[in-house]
Every structure is written in structure tokens, then in C-alpha cells.
Length: 268
Ligand SMILES: Cc1cc2nc3c(=O)[nH]c(=O)nc-3n(C[C@H](O)[C@H](O)[C@H](O)COP(=O)(O)OP(=O)(O)OC[C@H]3O[C@@H](n4cnc5c(N)ncnc54)[C@H](O)[C@@H]3O)c2cc1C
Ligand code: FES
Image (cartoon, rainbow, N blue to C red; front, side, top):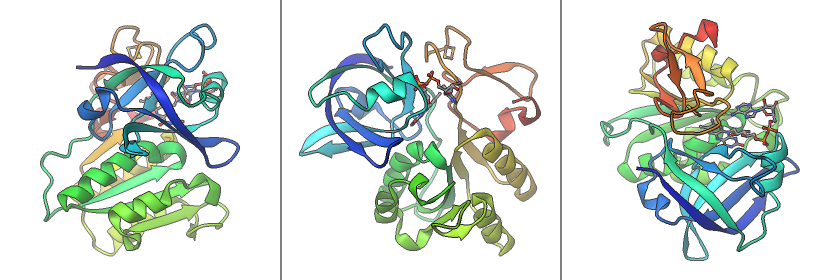
């Protein structure tokens, strides 16, 4: 059951001009959060922007001993720009945790899974990595961006998963392999490696490519989808995506974490 509460900003950590982490008090949302959940944040004075903005709960952590939620944000417009300037101690209205999280309950020590992130799609995979590591599940990360600056929180991923299980790809070759992140995954699959599930988050072209790979390799998936959202809990129908069964699925309520087979990628 989601909670609507005012949580104080604890810290903002800037990575570059367009990426930052926002840490707020965990409140009662922290204990309810599972990997893949998201929250709706009031990213301004309530007038501009008027609507709350959706962000993955990237991690449940601590800041100077205080339980905290972390959001990893890319500045794309008025709300994401405003949130970057919230001073420490500012009360921030937060509704969460929302949506269907990643399925992980069936995983154990003998399982190996793949995690694929594109750009800011790293966000939901941080807490997923933390939780999978704590369970002893072997998780391999394939993370791509346009350049090295786009590939965030590498130290956290490498701490949770082991540096040897983290592979990177960039368009300009400034970090890892020069090329697409899907090529990293393809290389492993071509070498005969198998995964119990593929978890992914990123832009639609990445999802489309991963859906094709998953079909070919008969891979089970859980994709953390994004869509423009007004309410975040199934009322406005602003977030729907075409489903394979001919319906439209609400990303906020039926997702954001859905198997690739649920979506009609030719119509997204
Ligand atoms: C479940 C979910 C989880 C998300 N997690 C994160 C996250 O962890 N970190 C993060 O940085 N962003 C995340 N997003 C995207 C984030 O919600 C948008 O970037 C944000 O709402 C933009 O607000 P804005 O006021 O800055 O931009 P606006 O001024 O509203 O829009 C600026 C531009 O961004 C586009 N845009 C707005 N919302 C989205 C969206 N949801 N998807 C794609 N394009 C959009 C608009 O079409 C416009 O072109 C998530 C979205 C969803 C639905
Ligand atoms: S955001 Fe309103 S129904 Fe999904």
C-alpha cells in the first residue's frame, strides 16, 4: 500500500551538469520498497510543474546514519531541473512505493541473472543489485551509455556484484566496449551462457532490441518501463502502452516491471 508523506531532503550529489542523486528521508516508504518500485515526487512548488514526477526508487540506503531513499535523476525539463536545487531540510511530498516491482522471490544461490541498463535506466537496477547480492544470486551487469559520463554509480554496482561481473559499453568508446550494450549480452549468449531472467531498464529502442534477443534465446524478462505519468496509480490512463493481447496496459499499475512478452513492441 503506497504512502503519501513529506520527506526531508538529506543531500544532493551532483555527477555532472545533467545527472544527480537526490537523497531524502526513507520515512515509512523505505521499509515497503522492493527493487523496481517507483515514487511520485512533487518537483516544485506544486504550481510549476503542477503534476508530480515519477522516479525509480534507486536505493534504500543511509546518509550519515539516517535511513534514506535515493533517486538518480537526469535533467530533461522543469521538474527534474527544480529537484536538483532543493536544499537540505526541504520537505518533499513523496507518494510511494508504487507499481509492480521486479520478480525476484524465486531466485536463490544457484541462479544467474542478467541486468541490462541504458543511460538513466540504471536507476532501478541499483537496489536490485544490492538485494540480489545479499541473497547470493549471481548477477551480471551490462550497462551502456553515450559516453563515460552517462554510466553512473559504477562503484556501487561493482561493490554489490563484483567488478568482474560489470561490463560497460559506450557509443564513443570512452568506457568499456565501443558499441551497443546489447552486443555485450549477445557475446555472452553466443558463448553459451544462460540466465534465469533478464532485468532491464532504458530507452524504448533498447527494450525493442532486448525483446528480440530474449525471444531468440528464449529468455524470461522483466523490463522496468517508463511512460509519461500524471497520477501514478491507475486513474488517469495517461501512461498506457499497447499490450500484446490487444489491450492497453497501465505502466504505473500493471507495471512498471513487466515481461517483454506483455508488450506489443511494434506499436510502442
Ligand atoms: C516509472 C518511472 C520511473 C522513472 N524513473 C526515473 C529515474 O529514476 N530517473 C530519471 O531521471 N527519470 C525517471 N523517469 C522519467 C521522469 O519521470 C521524467 O524524466 C520526468 O517526469 C520529466 O519531468 P520534467 O518536468 O523534468 O520534464 P518535462 O518538462 O515534463 O518534459 C521534458 C521532456 O521529457 C519528456 N518526458 C517527460 N516524462 C518522460 C518520461 N516519463 N519518459 C520519457 N520522456 C519523458 C517530455 O516528453 C519532454 O520532451 C521515470 C519515469 C517513470 C514513468
Ligand atoms: S499514470 Fe495515471 S493511470 Fe498510469
